[in-house]
Length: 135
Image 1 (cartoon, one colour):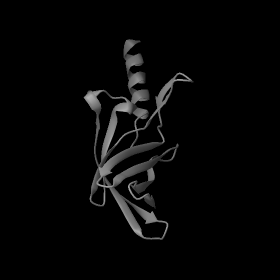
Image 2 (tube, one colour):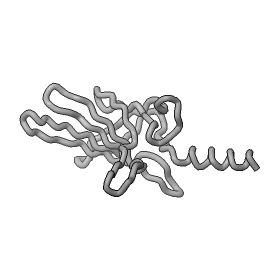
Image 3 (cartoon, helix red, strand yellow):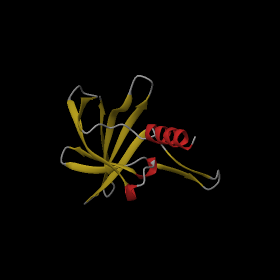
Image 4 (cartoon, helix red, strand yellow):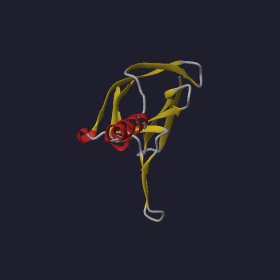
C-alpha cells in the first residue's frame, strides 16, 4: 500500500510540472517574421520539486532569462499558489526592464509552450514595446 501511495504521489507531482523541452522553440510574430526562444536547463530551487521552485533558463535574442511560475498571493482570500499556465522572468536594463512571459498549454493532446511575449519597458522615458511570438 505504501508503494502504491508513493507511486501515485510521484505521478501527480511529476504531472504538475511544465514541459518545456530544451532547445529552440520557433514561431512567427504578428508581422509573420520568424522568432524563437531557446530553452536551457530546467531545475528546482533547493532541489525541492515543486512548481513554485521550478526554474528554466530561456534565451531570447541576446538576453537570458530565468523564468518561473508566477506566485498568486492574496491575504484577503487567504490564497497562496501559482499560475501554472505561464512562466515569467524579468531583467533590469539601464533605463527600465525587459520581461518574458511564456504561455503554456495543458491538454490531452499537448503539454508545453505555445508562444511567448517579450516586453521592453523603458520607464525613465515611458517607452513600451512588445514582441508576441506564437509557436
